[in-house]
Length: 111
Image (cartoon, rainbow, N blue to C red):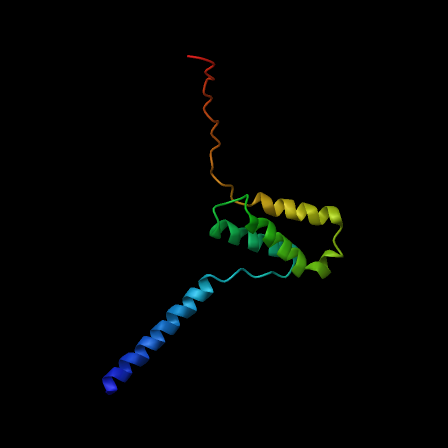
């Protein structure tokens, strides 16, 4: 009976460790101490977790940073805040999708 309890405890402990490492690896990045740092952290996170720009991750993440650092944004001129956002998006990983033109089929008017 003691042997079964030992195995049960070892299983619970190892499951807890596995759960803790899994949760921490999927956690979102920090919001940083300022707006630029927040933008960089979230852009890097989106680059790792998504197929690339454009997708909703990038826009939503930058909007999140704007919301978190709203108080600090009042001291930054509007053109500077927009420039920071644009510079952060330049670091976004682009998708590698190739645009392929459709094949044009001739129109048959009669047999």
